[in-house]
Length: 168
Ligand SMILES: O=c1ccn([C@H]2C[C@H](O)[C@@H](COP(=O)(O)OP(=O)(O)OP(=O)(O)O)O2)c(=O)[nH]1
Ligand SMILES: [Mg+2]
Image 1: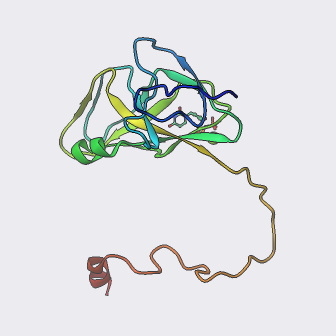
Image 2: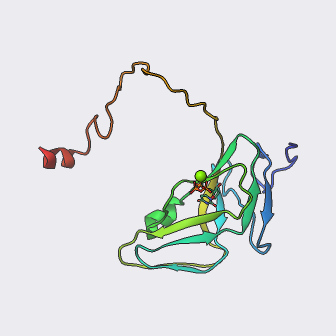
Image 3: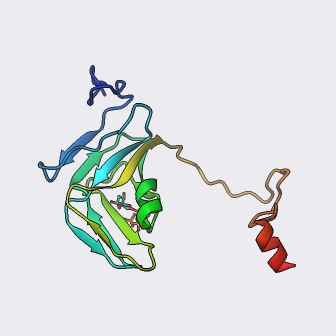
């Protein structure tokens, strides 16, 4: 697939990969990176949304994409909205498969226990991280190779000091 000769946004480096995007709502922008080197391209909501405390809603972004084979796009929350308002994504990160041609939607949730979150059409609600992935062959075996960690997990290396005190 040919790479764009020029960056799609001024002051940003040329892209590594071209991804076809259908703008289902042409008045809204393409996904865009805020800074050079950013991993996530921001996605917007096409609709006004009010999320009550604890409420979740599947929100449209107005775009459909065609990822090349061997790539996945992951829908991540934006940390600023999470820190300021408690906005997150239920299934974070959401997985956009290479073969998916439908509209990308974001399953938002309001984690604030008290305040509703009000979003307006065009607000940036999430970010899309495009990555290569490996397709695994899952091979059944009787024994796994040994490792230093072994089967220790779920806090085997210790937790917060307050948790250690309360559990002892
Ligand atoms: O945040 C998300 C997650 C997924 N999708 C779309 C793209 C993805 O390719 C498809 C299926 O997602 P996933 O495999 O996570 O969901 P599933 O419950 O396993 O559905 P399916 O049975 O269709 O695979 O839904 C989104 O638009 N947003
Ligand atoms: Mg699936």
